[in-house]
Image (tube, rainbow, N blue to C red):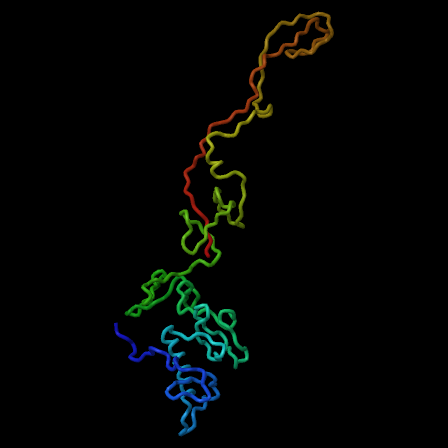
Length: 308
């Protein structure tokens, strides 16, 4: 493995210098003036001026500290003393995330100091390329098919399922389903990126296709209805029996008794002497009955899951 650079910073210059400078500095001791400000050095030292070693050590220390941070962490941390006037600027927040500036901020900028981890208007978490939200579309807005031209100049129609990006090991997926999309899956657990609906309202139910508003209904569970092997019991009512008659037999002796209505003949006048009323013997038990039926239909279980 070859290094991309030959010079690196292995230590922070002047980090071991003494920061408390006595009235009479000691010969051979390195000091660092921590009170050195930007205004003291922004114009540089005058020509032929020998600067204080304490000032020089402090300037070298500050430069080396920033270089060391970039050297070891790849990017500088955010500072409340820096004006981030150039957009975008990328810094490391105190939470360890990298942030990209959306608007200028800083002590010398109108918006003032804006901490990246608490100022979403001015900063957003930096992502070089988020493949999970990458959208590819062509000029007419069609996200399903794209036109490409081969080496002979012939236009070809290409499905986005066949598009791959080099440099990403072809690990590119297309998020075709917006958040909140609900779908059926023939598996117990929802796939990655989806959440299984485990509410009672979608359990043990059949599916109905409708061309109107989607809803729910019914009162009998799937396994209850389709587990039946007989109809419900039912007792016949008089109105439900077919029209029919019954034949009966008997003797009638006529006399002078009071007129009686016979159930097997008309009322006679003059009055009969002994009009007998004949009835049949009662049959039946008034019990409910049912019919055999096999509702045990074959089925395949599915789940409903919602896109995260």
